[in-house]
Length: 274
Image (tube, helix red, strand yellow):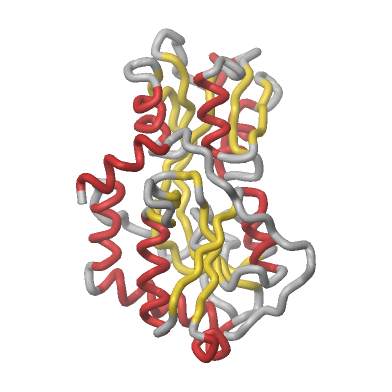
């Protein structure tokens, strides 16, 4: 268990070959059709340890992979993972390239216009990371800086909202590219999730630290709008693994924390299909 958590640190800057999303639209399947087919195609991140990453054996691994494997088991089907870049997650779902997203999907009002969220099943703190030698205690201290974020991510929104026009926000394809941008000096700081500190320390021990916490977000499973069968199946599954301790065990395994307390509702982000 502890070895699994340590293993992801060495993968921080690994190159991941992402499968591209075919531009030809695919057909969206119902839950019963997937059960009959016998395979669930799961959209997941492939470069964002410990949420989702490809391990040294070339297999999809991490927090979201463990939860998705449990969901596939609940449906009685095999799982096929489709690693996706941040910006490709929602298009892959809405065009039917994947059946469902277990892909570190922070729950935002804007995304809720395009996908249906489940109840939250994970929490994530978004922070600013920079060199220890730089003194930063508030957003005004980064005036004139270049700050890296993964484009279309929760970090992108949090940093952009916080710094406004006082700093330049530079957007990269994914978390690995964002981290590399800081290490190589392309940017002065990055907006990252709660695991960036570990990944940065693995790449350059003792150089960087967390400076400012912007917000805590909650992650939900993504399904297509209006598909009540998927939404009900996922919410029932989340209730089950919360109650039986499986979600707490996965959280402890990958994050070394107890299961967070989740909100019963989030304004303008419905957890259920009406």
